[in-house]
Image 1 (spheres, helix red, strand yellow):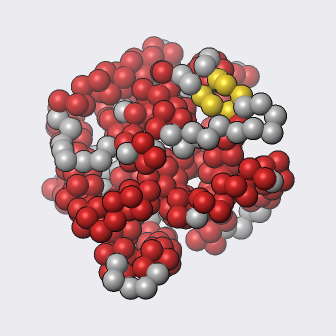
Image 2 (cartoon, one colour):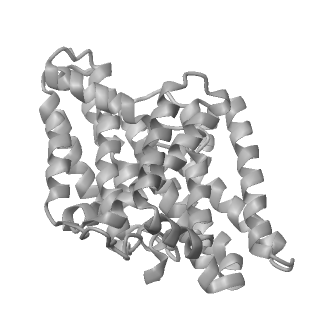
Length: 360
């Protein structure tokens, strides 16, 4: 399975273009570049999910490659989803800057509702899978799964979080649109409401539900202040790059993390680190770009075949043939990416379009 990590690295090297000393890629937040980065991390998400079933099967992770794989997976932790949130926040703010109040007013119907409906269609697929496998489920579980608060085996926390973050953005800008300095006030309100969301999730959910929320907020702030931030980052590129790396390391060394504020800080610095990296290094790889541009179906539907393969013989197939399990799961995930267009609900600003707003 470590071959997937090696494969990702090789993919990144293919089509990689490094900026000359003292120069930068100005399209580091372009559609293709953002999709390439998202494509890179969606494979890491796949590895995280598939490893959960391999571990549950009782597979012995004792070989050196398996040990390295587990170590990398553990150290990355929730950082693998940070760029999804960061680019989404950036994209939302770019659209608001360009389209103003009409975009804000249209967010409930054109972004929030279609995202929920597309997620609910996926939940129905998981419900059908649970019924076929004769899995014990309750009506309450099904109803809560449609909101993202519960799950039928599907990945739910990210969709729940991103929908609420979209709602926070819409509410903040809608309520402050007639005020002086409305955008600044809206961003301040968004930050405050994000803390409220963090606290609510802290009381009711596991840490991964809320330990990366502020990556989204940081994306909105980068968009709002980019006319000042980007020249500053270019002027002091290496000091900033070193600073962000040091902050990540320091956050790793600090064990206490009240309400995951430490991890949220690390998420922000990680997002900035990747952003600075793409200012210097462009990844021009069509495979990663495709993966990133189909983020929603790849993320939401990938668990279905994992569940089926695991449950067909109580995990024995997974335990005895882990490579076949991983390969079949990955291949099926790609198929979902191709098929999703046939039931994708519109109007919706798709994730890949929303996160590179200079091209929107």
